[in-house]
Length: 77
Image (cartoon, rainbow, N blue to C red; front, top):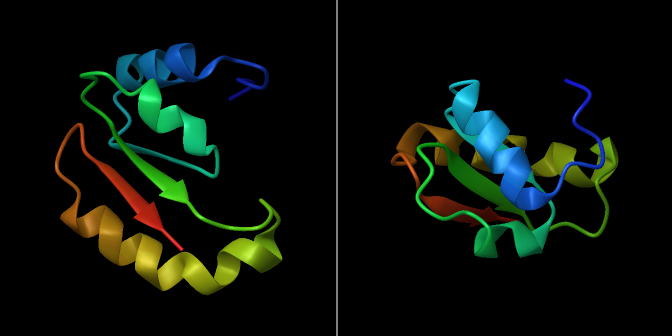
């Protein structure tokens, strides 16, 4: 979506405007920017954002997405 370099607060605001249900990130600082936006946030607790680090978490991410309430935050990993 060409949102590279966008600050956490603006990223969440854009996601809300685009009607995202959730944002998945490995940026642990984003939880402090969440505020009261309608989209949820999943923070991945991984060593790296490469697919090899994330792939083992896919099942847990899917389960978490199914249970998230609007505006909630979850940590996976």
